[in-house]
Image (cartoon, rainbow, N blue to C red):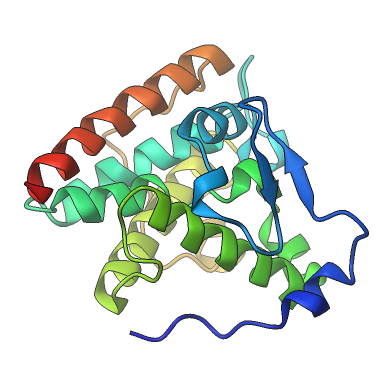
Length: 213
């Protein structure tokens, strides 16, 4: 399986004089050439729990975090593929994990920012996957399934939290997938979203370890 097309590290680093960030764990993560050794799940959980979807433009006293979105995607993958293994579920869990560094740019802004941002996201995602025992690049079928679950989650969020109608999901957001009607999305305080994300991660981590024996 070939890795994603990449630009040179020199091209990426030319966009900023410093390309690393210090994490609360003490790690220094290089954004241009991220090492799996500098990635900690505690840093990811904290960042995703504090990072809101839809630019924070959602109903309720708390933002709908990327951490909660990630957990929702895992549950949707389970619906789409009831016998999904731990590797696929972990990939779903971490599909937006790069956003603990990049934050969740809304789709219109991603289009403006362009290829450099996409390249940083891809490099971070690959490093994160390797750090937690996954292949750096997903198999096409797994990637497509997670993307479908991601779009179902997004459509559900759009209708329940972001003020869109189901018709606008199709016409404005271009979602073919229908929003779920049998779940109620409840945005949580940061600490609770972080706790639930970590709890689910450790369950999958144990399942992966058992598979490796």
